[in-house]
Length: 380
Image (cartoon, rainbow, N blue to C red; front, side):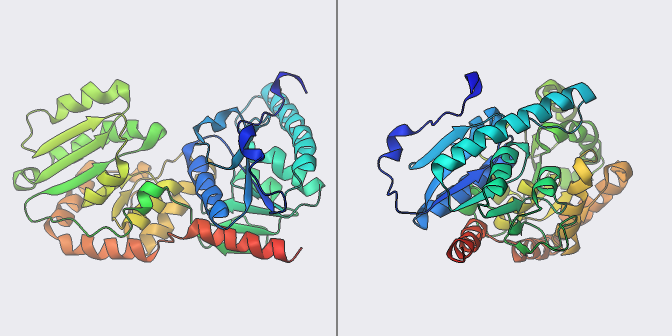
């Protein structure tokens, strides 16, 4: 099939597989928001005794090859937010990938296919529908994503991270399992709320698309805090590389206990566990990690997120009492500074919010997905 032909990256592992054991395909690609849950589901499948194949596209390079997992790459391309010409090319790639997937699934003969969202899941899930292989979709956000909306028809189940999840077809079963979290986050599950008498740890991050907003507006919030609160503040903030020096310069000379401004943190689980309050966007991964670690948050959803799904995610988190939702369009630095000062002066409210965050947590999400898949396989 040309130079884009699917490739098995773990050929040696195939010979060690027990061919009489059911094989389950997991498919997704793109960002860590899709890859991390896929990895967790693969691990849970292996622990349950299944053989596992992972199907992705060129963007799925973040996937860590797990022992015993056969990994394949197919052609796939996102269609949304493109010109008509580029949409046509993307659609052609998607259907070429589906043709690849038809051949691959005929070879693998999986007992089920799990789609974890994104257009990288399109070829394998479409092929599964054509071969009448049971399909289970996992949706991260509180609004069913575009790819999952297209693929939902004919699927057996939508496993959701939020309840309710909007735009799920009324005739399709949805079952909340939560979003599978990374192992490093699970190790920090329900971390005790940190001491707050002498210092207050504030963590501010926005991801690759959101950090720039916080670089522009959040320094103004912190500069308006009373001096007695500034002297308690241990600040850790994410900023885009081009904003680092600007943000650091604003904070220079302030009486904060400590300031750390970086473009990337590889110890996010530890930072979350150490924080008294988080300020962040409303991505599904972020919400899940806040819930599992049990941390309250001020959520400012990314307004350009598809179908405004971050606002829906944040609303469910904050309506439970775990945090405070502030739309970007109504973000007022003086009012936010006033609210932050109230929270820093009344940590009991934050402790209660942290408990509410954990009440929403579903740390066994990956296992719950696998249990549902097992039931569907047994019913075949």
